[in-house]
Image (cartoon, rainbow over all chains, first blue to last red):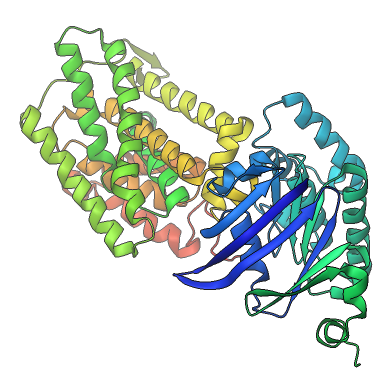
Length: 238
Length: 293
């Protein structure tokens, strides 16, 4: 069974659809890339999937229909979303960000354990636990945003442009982290990225959005060899 | 010197009233960017409810506790019914709505209880202590302790509890809060309810000395607006300090500058604010308007 299944999803702003009839799946522990040019509807797709944007169509999380469920409730059910441009609460401390991430977790013990776990993964965050998230570097904020999203132990994690504004070395670390999350914890990951090259290296499959519709889909390996994709997203002239 | 200290004490006492109402205004402004002009009239209405219950024979503190709960419900209901539907409307529309609420609650108090000044029972004993020639009444001490307790409770709630953290998050980051599972509107509703309780407490503290009337809070809300501006519109701690400063400035100003007299005392806090805002436009405790990208 797929961790996330999206069928016939359409969404937009002010009645004007931006994405139409999106159909995609993310398996347990699978990394899926959502590629496309600026304005193709990648962010809109994620915002609709997480429920902050009104949409039509069906979504199933671990087999459960979540189409009519509020954004806040989807988080509690295990659909995490790191929005574009840092999903951190900048005026809150690092520790408070993790507590916020665990808002829908009721077990105090689990929150404590997970906080300790993520501080183990990111010692920098532990050192800065009392600092405001806004005072962290871009890379640290992105790590915090992901740790924050992982506090619910989600089944699926959606990341919108996680590498935006990060140095290449930091981006590489980040992608290793995402790959490990999928492999070790079985988290399904849906990544929207400009950096198609790196993304296709860690992704198993990919979808390409064009003008709000899925135009191409396939395994990452196949898509990496697709000349149209090479030209449009990988900067390789065929 | 004794006179000045005496006026300082008196000023702190009225300052607690301004502070409590300013906290209510700031809590609502921080969460919804709305200045709720009706806060004082809503509070007066709830004090009337408490008064009515004492007339029916309930002990004062029982009546106050019930009215505090009713205040919470009223604040939450006002948000759900009157504010939430127009939350994305232009600010002018919201200002007009708040003025409508102001008139509506005042009219309801007037209709139900009339315009006569009613005696509201004292909350604390009539004891007066004299410390170094300065007289401190149990009433003044009681008001200050009440404010300190409430401020402490509020701070602890915002800092240490899950719901307090979520309320702060919903206020500071309305867009991001759903991503961590926070129902923003629920938090805003709670915030309006809690603010109404603070407004109610301000009105309860004011009622014994001002006498209960439908327009009782009119001058108080002007001072509270001044206090919130002084402290910074996004800082509850600033609202408390602002309230106390405005209270003290009012009494000291009237005592020290004989020319001011009773007629001009309302002008003092504004003079003070003008001077302080000249130096710190965001208020003493407010954050400046710069945003990080």
